Image (cartoon, rainbow, N blue to C red; front, side, top):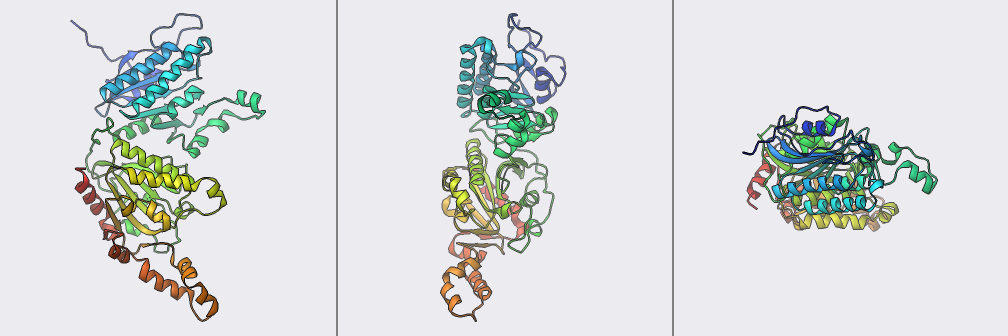
Length: 470
């Protein structure tokens, strides 16, 4: 008679086995292969070859996971080591369960040559294939280089601790090849990768990284094509999101406070907050159901959209579409960032990527205009004609081709130059009243309904409930 595999005894939190046990619900982790860190160079590798792997549960849902051991040959990847990771990933794909990897690797094992390189090739291919099946999360709590940097970058989300480092080539190679002296932190620390979008979440330590990974897993479906995991409905932290937004068009505020007043309390998990901070991307829940939130951030660059913000938002829209998560879009933007720097940064290409992402997404898409939406940015931020299912607006929002003062400078420029008695402010007020109001946008069909800010949560939830069958 087969004997059930028992959960291993608790291991120290800083060991591979301890990390996997910390990720999984207590008592649920079962090893598939156990890495052994006591081996010395020249000794025969045991199953796992410096990596522990297994399966467990997170919030009662199955998960597969592995953890590399930097104490064994620097966490370097050899043939057997790679086989363990690939086998774990394939089992996850077959089972329809997410994969979480604790990555701490010096790269390919020099002593194994081509076999180590081939191992990384198999891992990269398995990760790409898995991206069509289940979510993948990487946690970095040490130093990873070479293939150990590419491997997490191929997964859906990367969590870095504050003492972790990740780079393709280390400081010594950089110094030899480029003559540049640089520290590991300056080359590939969390501050670097938090700003460039490589790291989605920054954690204080390994324990905090595990908490963030568990939060992320709770907001993602178990597999691609699966239903999002509902939770109990939690009331938002505030009552009236409209009280947060100043009436003055140029006055800043934090759009995350608006989200907190609409979405379920404590559910929001913002991704890449330091990369393109003028665009907020986050997972959250509305009435207990996971959603993806995209919002202009007036606190940064006045909410203007630049190349980096477009790229960040486009990637997030594609992720939500792949995971089957509805999209909520909060709009408050004066337009795209003008100028030579942005044109050189390919703002046209990145802006087009965001247009393509919204137009191609097949999940429910609901937009709420908070204060202003002008020009191409008004179209790009999930407008109705781009494919939004429902578009709401608050009563005082301004929506149009451009702001009133700029518009009258073009429409009435000659009159203003020839007649000094004309008031630019009066002309701007008249133009805004005729062309930029939310009721005018509703009358033209640009907006489906003008709603009171206090009705935002109810209206957005109704829209998503109505679209749930899609």
